[in-house]
Image (cartoon, rainbow, N blue to C red; front, side):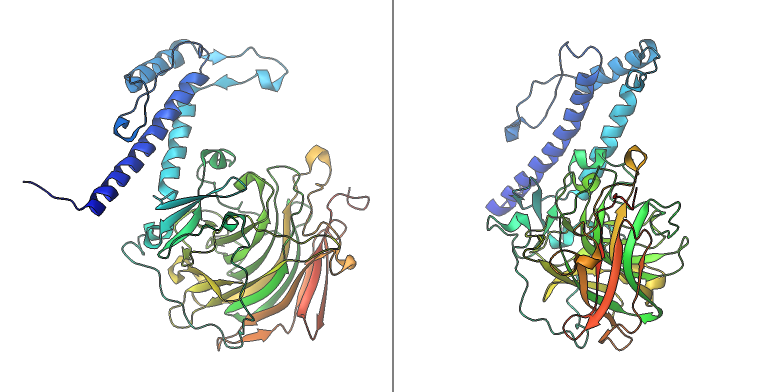
Length: 469
């Protein structure tokens, strides 16, 4: 039977074929890379591709059978075990089968979360921003969302009066004037090296499970936060200034965010989170980046950052979650702050996120949660760092601006105009804000209230100093 294709259908078919070929080529390149990494990498290198129709030209050879045979013989008869020595670097065993297995797992995960783009934008910071058809984003891999499309925007909370609109060029990837078309969303492409920095493929894009502890003697996560609790909360709003704090190593981070919380601080903790963070482990650099997070089991198995799993549904084509923020605040200079609003849609129960004045980012579906299906029991605002105690001392990783709260405006980091959403979907001021710094000699916090900023606080610090050894 003869099947006729329109030009548009033929181009789409060709594009899909090319995308699959590129994915296949990636796996072959991984096999080639492992082969090169073997002890005898000075000999010939094999590569194979069936994608020559798309100008991907490589020498062809039966790589899989040769490579597997090589590894079986190599691993069973000639294990590369370096001589035992007191030097840790010389006391390692190269295991090519394990390395290949790891790379295959990484590439399988990359194919799962990196969807086929209709356009790709190169950011000045090196990021690749893919424009993905809205209903093909990772969230719609979830069984409860397969075949669906994003919901329309709900009614904003009463008393929410956005003044003007936030600049739509507050992220580096938009500086060249390119944008994603309507009907798509921008997603920061995850690269192999991003996953390699994580402790495992399964833990990539996730927080560690003990990060919410408040035991200052044992937890490596340190906080300076303002919080309210004891009532039913259906959302929260705040403005916070953005800085680029120095982070000592890739195993630490510094963030400023808002937490909407329900459940106990055991295994059933539910959180919704949004803010900015500097995290070399996740992003590979020290840029402050807009982020989201969620969990429904105290950071154990569920949830993730940004769009790195099926969860948050993005609806906006102008904001890339996980992309670098610019400009940032400067000491004794200009201050750049962002506003965040999280609230529960009273009709459908989904939790929505708004950035700035009117830019609706998307929503966390209600079915993701257990306790947050009803309401939150606590709201937190503030900063958090990881202290790995490099060289046996407290980390010099900065929180916020890297300066203590007493220095005030233009020098210290702040949260201002703190509000919560009540049962009637109305924004109201906080009535009982409490502040806490679990290591006040390293990072501290001071709260206040006035007619312009409402409830506010300054927070942050330099980390290691004379009083914080």
